Length: 386
Image 1 (cartoon, rainbow, N blue to C red):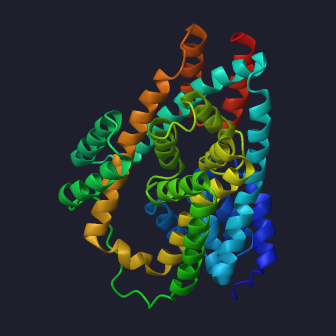
Image 2 (cartoon, one colour):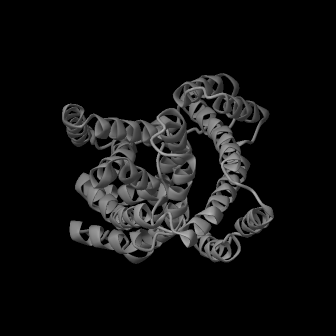
């Protein structure tokens, strides 16, 4: 059976429609598979599964990266760009609109009540992510050691890049005999995407250089989001926890409660949780800040999918690379735990808050869609937190 040829417009509009209802973050991978494998037949199932493995291994938001992977396999680098932009565009515009609205009405009593409860829901969501990510990542005792080290280091305010780098080294030492992927040694010669990746990377460098001279705050915002995405092993929650550390604790661009409100808005917005970067960018530097922050938080993910995809099987076959990646993933369990603790201390707890967090955790553990949890929690908060 001949694989159908995907046009750029078909890729863009298919993923635009999908992105407009992309609630649930990584859960959207199943819907991407239904679109790309079952309905459009752009990929076969084996190729799609390989893409999932790639996107779970490299840093960034898995669902966004899978959109790029599908486009890459269906229509090359241009297809990857069409799919990636289409999938994220709805979330960007919705989050900008919510940022504008938030900046105008956040002081209203009913809004204050709603966000008081939403901050509790953020604690429950991150705590659940810690448990879920920990169950799938911490398989052997060295993983627990790395996670405990990372949690302690983050709570002591060590720089995230130092913790991540140390965890990679410890992983190479302690995890070299655990969970090592062995790829095939007879992989076909990959098709190079080096030139387009270099061209796009050069464009990013030129943009950052221009921002450095034109607007130093925008430059700092863009450079920070680029760096966060490059080290966000473990998906969107890893990026958001790094973002919290840098934006709230290191640079004091936003107070903790406003950042947590941004996470809550990200949960009711289609797209990955890292769309919180758009909110941060808007609150820091307006519309220009929203655009630069969004570009920064997504560009490395896109470039890594396009650049690494042709060589992924060979990378997986390296025991040292696999062990280092395992160490980094374990460190993000510690990072999530540390951020759960910090978020907990940023809530003004009362009896109604405690009841809400318990109910939210039970609902999350029972796999109820996070959108319904957030909407129900908002109503609960408006009624009880006045």
